[in-house]
Image (cartoon, rainbow, N blue to C red; front, side):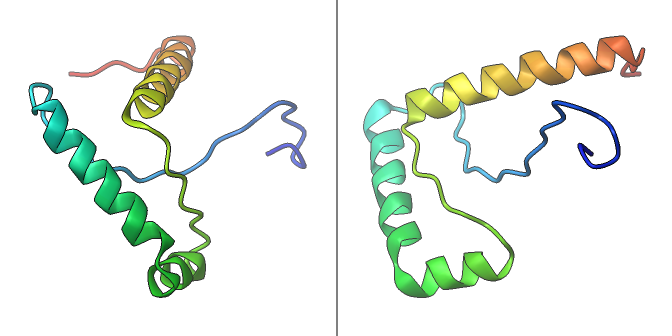
Length: 86
């Protein structure tokens, strides 16, 4: 988009595993630890790289902050474009 003349445009694709809001902390921490281990396996990292995916093992707290920033960013875009849900 920058090459098309839209300065400061930044959009990334991301994937995540989400759990229900009231999932016990110990379960969230265990899921996080296992996902980090899996993402570090050479075979999984190589498979993800085929799709251009770069694993980022942010903490659950960091990811929550990321989700809030995404929500804030895209809420502004939707409002500016007058996009509404039914």
